[in-house]
Length: 385
Ligand SMILES: *[C@@H]1O[C@H](CO)[C@@H](O)[C@H](O)[C@H]1NC(C)=O
Ligand SMILES: *[C@@H]1O[C@H](CO)[C@@H](O)[C@H](O)[C@H]1NC(C)=O
Ligand SMILES: *[C@@H]1O[C@H](CO)[C@@H](O)[C@H](O)[C@H]1NC(C)=O
Image (cartoon, rainbow, N blue to C red; front, side):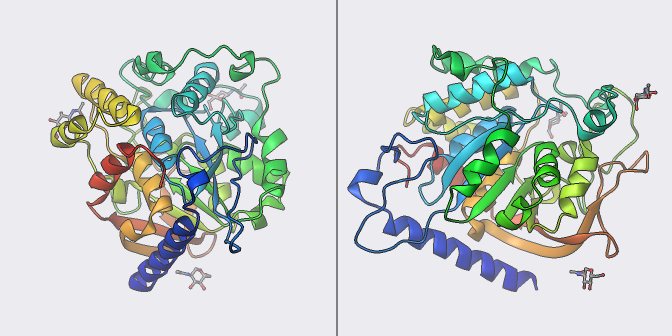
């Protein structure tokens, strides 16, 4: 079973590869967005009809590893990044989050990618009107609170100063619900979602626009812990929960809704990401390539700064982006019926196998250690390819 899935994944990767080779044309080899449009469509070579590239919408919590994953994914030319959706139920604040995403895009000369606001609270708060942040309060966000994400540990200073007032969080800033359904209607090719934070926005999109469930080919989710412990470390609220992973725990109700929505899901849980701690030798290797591109230099500075604080992090979000961009890195994957616990105090947010209520989810249990090198190579590559 696992092997046939890996084979399937390899076929998908091959399809992507062929599509990207077919798109290599002189007009399309630098930043690839010369059409000035807002949706990232590229002019297609006229010689032969090409399968359209997949478009990825990145739902993220504008956190440290989100920056890494987004920069990395923008390096690929066999897929389009259709939009960035910050969701701040957990780690970020919406104002700085939106500015940092626009800064990241300007830094990479990708002002064509839109940013649409998500939610600032978990669905349990939004649905009940009781904004007590009951989950967020119990999770240690960082040694220095949300300030870490808000400033990208100070590295947002490297981003260009933005003068366009529309690239700020102003009253009436477009929300994902106002823009994404229309954007999706204008896309011909496959559509995938990448979820790097809570599942709040995807849950509300499916609740408000159920027809979108048929249009999304797959959701890649960084989250959950299947056969390994969770990561709600340093509990401020003393929740004795050793099962849950942060992204799922911070809005378990939404996660559950999305897991049982019937939309195909590939989960990249802690089982896979635990094998990718960021150690000193990785940072040193990245440092050797840091002069090649701004992005490699930026991520190197980020990791060196975090290490100096003594924090241990893994390639969480980058690995989820890596599985999406290049499924051939998957080494072990199983399909199980899965749902999320929402009603047992010590297990809230746990991803569990459940053949009654759960729906099939592809769970990546192991990925190739080559991903360390792939990540560094991509980041230090100047052109998208
Ligand atoms: C709001 O939620 C918190 C945490 O779940 C709870 O302790 C509190 O009693 C709730 N307040 C109301 C008015 O329901
Ligand atoms: C980070 O990992 C190292 C080595 O595994 C360990 O000694 C240290 O206590 C960890 N630091 C934190 C803050 O967890
Ligand atoms: C998922 O559950 C359905 C219904 O209970 C069952 O028929 C199916 O075999 C299960 N799939 C897996 C992968 O366990």
